[in-house]
Length: 289
Image (cartoon, rainbow, N blue to C red; front, top):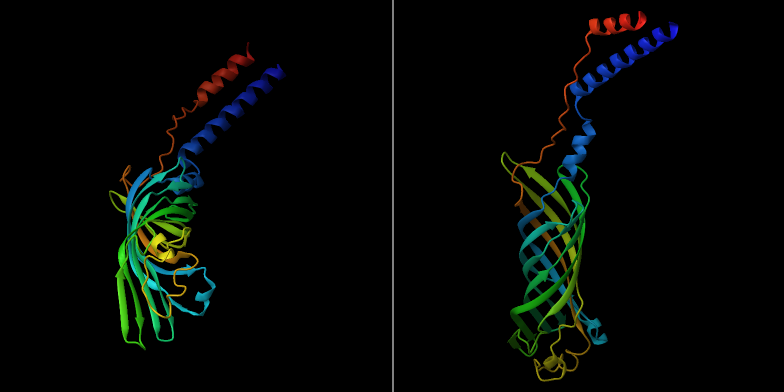
């Protein structure tokens, strides 16, 4: 008899405790950190965007004779367009893009000045690692190989003492037909939510390393020269590589979800509480069996 009473009491306590705990879960809903974590990791699968900023460039010359010359960086605007794709998770993104910018340098030694400006079209493939720290902020690092095509430009030589200036256009006679580069950079994404859609605003900076020699074959074999008494002896010796710092602002528009992401908690079935008179009836029947 005592065993029956203990068993029934235990069942009663368990049923009441389970009912109260489930009712409490229904009232409070899912943990707050679950909603924050979900919002932080949401990221569109496909996006398009535009990139605009400034490129500050110069050239690296390997021939030892250039160490006496003064270099002056050349600053130019840059403009690019891209498509952004998520690689399975919000942490890894690939962003094929096309950029238009100018590169070059200014060399000077006393009264002699050499200037080069080359317009480039870059085909880039940045691989990006993002780390979302909140719903709105995500810093990222990127590595971007590029294949670059010169689209023209100007090269000039001025001798102030001789009051002479020589100019020529950039072509395959004065510039390599292509250049391979590598850009290393970092930035931060900021998500702006609107009523029916959202966009990403990003600020980034990177440094471009030209990996191939930009001297043309005709320059180095002597077929093409800006003839002068000062530079002519070694202007095309060694190698010439592009270098430069880029700072840009991006605006990214998601294509697959124009509604601001929201957390949808799982639907829980309502708990039907056990009536007290039912419990009393069960206890009475158990005792008198």
